[in-house]
Image (tube, rainbow over all chains, first blue to last red; front, side, top):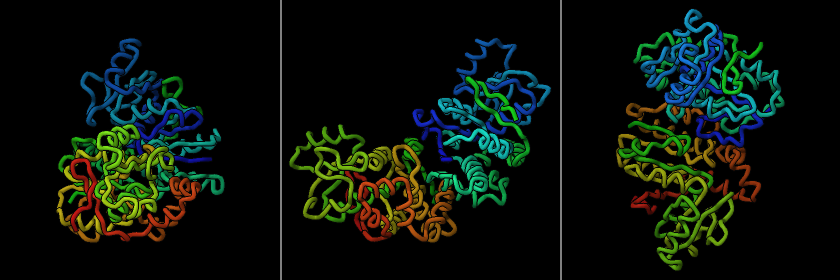
Length: 243
Length: 243
């Protein structure tokens, strides 16, 4: 298996993705929130690139059938139902609902990856389950796509991707071919593996979320293998992959 | 001093560069070749983004006053005078000439960085001299800009940037503020510092250049502090900074 890592969605070339399985990583917080929402009973999640796309789609489907979800600058978008904190996505609120999801980095990255043969959403909380799912589908090429932060490098996404490289390396000792960037991700992960929460707290994005009062979100997003759910993209909708 | 690292030119936001000193890194091979050309007597070097820009500029200045230099796919562009191997840039060929320089990654990155307060060109062969120059100009913010390879991550540029972070950290123990990406670059460098040539030979770009027969270029580009010359951008022209 070939394993590549993209630090930013701008590294995507659509023609390159068509035969590949892509795991979209946005640790803080889109991936973690999407995993949580599907775990807590949401019917499906439609990622969109912009607030305008979200509103237009909501009008097409009908206001009463959907929840409008997303953030700008870490805060809930005005007029939307939910923001981007996993704690908002409780069973009572989202049970059997379709969520239209619009975040600054993660949902854009998922849309940009949609030319791929298969798209999954991953982060620390579902890391092991995502990798089991990857190994079962036996892809020839896997791309770990970090969502970044406003088109800049994201430490937490890179460390999470590096952890995926590390675990796959343990499992596939002989047959794994790492790209230069996958190796670099592994090295960055190595520096932070002892304390993922410390890494999140010290990262640029983490510090910003702390300043907004989201410290519990960081603790939640750092808990490896806490939710065994894999969101997978099917004709534009994220649904729970069968286990 | 704040120290940031961009893995790719796509991370540039022009508005962010205006107060900053940018070091453009393209180890294989534009930075190394530009340093060599100025060291060997070229009058100045005009980096351009495209082959068309190079030809147009040549016609404006006059064919006999310039040399057309650059590569596509690692090979000299047809009809150009020189390619992108430092060994072509001997004193006999380039003495007192103006070079129009068009490479796939490096010259584009330099043009993209030109909104910055100051732009220098750096790589392993002039690393120490570049950093001396940076320290003398006492900038508040420095950006290490990796040129990448066709809009993808470049291991060799990242390791070189990481080495610059490492050396600056030794010199400025207390007053250096590293971004998340600068710290990541430092970690990647740490894995390769024992053998830069081995890293170049094993990198994606290095392997490609080896396949074209450029093994001597890789050895040359790996020699740290071999040429004490700093190219600096002045109104679109790279010239030798006074030492």
